[in-house]
Image (cartoon, rainbow, N blue to C red; front, side, top):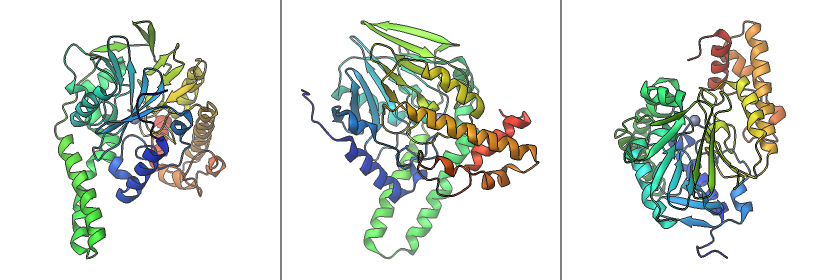
Length: 373
Ligand SMILES: [Zn+2]
């Protein structure tokens, strides 16, 4: 049925999880608290599809439906987010440009394993560095599409500064120093070799980050934009604030696929720049679309719409408990320790005991205090 080799997505996922455990999730850190989205133990929807996966040099491409691919990093190259790849009759749309020019260039090279069509369109689902810091490699004729707020944020330098960037990227030099110090104390040859590999990967990643020149998208929308490409309709929607102030989702109505950026991830998304209460409502509008497949910003594609309900329930609970504790004058830090989300443990990995992500709670408190930026 497929000319390409069939590769079980399970294998890729398992390898990524093992690598994540070895290296520490921070190595992969994109704007997901679970690193590349695998560590949370979420269901592996890709394996269920029976879809063909093509392994290129740095990326594995899973054909979710004909001509629509989920691209994920499958080598030592740190790429950050997933990309959605839409192969049209005469061109290609890439949804999200990864974490560095090196990663974005590698994707364009690897694309040749699935199509000869040129990349004519790209999109940034939001302004986070791991989805937009490959923009500079696209030639000027490529239309890079985003919400107008995303363009404004990147133009203002917010994709390479601020709390989230410092959290995920600013900490890297210190981590490298820690690893170097640890290496000096290690005597076991196998353990040393393992750490040296991790360290080298991290040094390479950090060097690649120095090449980033944040490049704003050149085509913006405020609510909706539609492309008609060789019989395929491609809709870009802004349904309201969610993971950031300018989240755009890509909807392919004939293919019945949505590509969501970090509004949805395989596990719990990062909420440090989010609008948690509005996010729940934005997802209600998303759910009104008719689709079978979700390609999330991190992690494997999936079909189970109830996973959106689970995320909404989690966020509503987190919001309500935060509001109550904020009203009692509790600090964000103490609130994060006291909030109990164990009722959601069946739906999300890693909720073994009370406590919430401190950055998410701090963000909610900033929203409640009216000083979120
Ligand atoms: Zn993000």
